[in-house]
Image 1 (cartoon, rainbow, N blue to C red):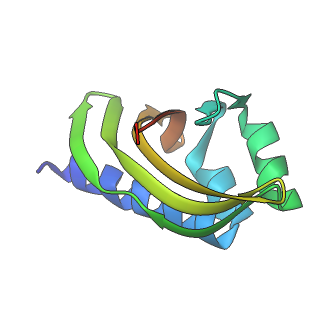
Image 2: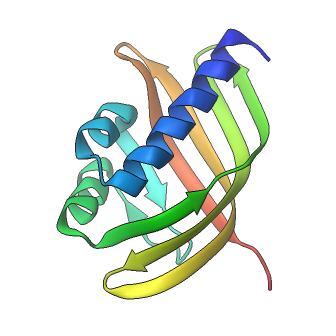
Length: 124
């Protein structure tokens, strides 16, 4: 594993920990201003709308597992393919998530930033 790949794994861990803790400061730091965050119900959020929802309690994560299957880093981008299993309160409704997912990180002038997320619900 390269140094960049190790760093991206650490950033992914920080991001998921921040989601669990509703840590807006860390999420704001990690997310690119151009973030496109797609949810498993096909809705999309920007950085601003996602952070507003986290702040308002629209998303309350109770637990999250995020095993990584493939991490590819080249130049100024990295792709993380894996899974995201979670228990979340989504707008007041409890939900269990079991998704395959793809996260994209880009090296911007201010450092590595989370720029895109795409989950796919697993059949079952």
